[in-house]
Length: 55
Image (cartoon, rainbow, N blue to C red; front, side, top):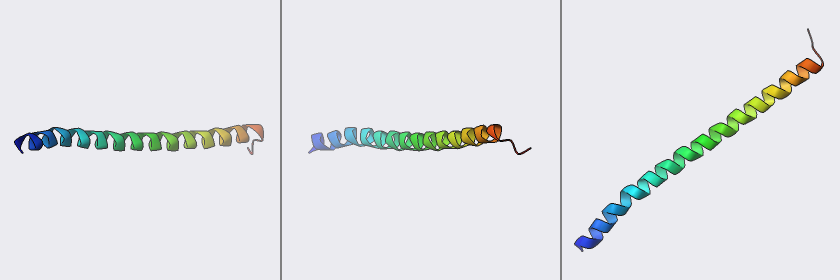
């Protein structure tokens, strides 16, 4: 019984750190995707305004 408890205790922090790492990775990839989309739309907007300037 004592052995089982030790095994479980060794496993818990590993599982938790993995979950946290996975979440932060997901957040990073989402942020990167949003940034990339924003930059792409900005680029198209700038190129369009350069092609036919309204000023």
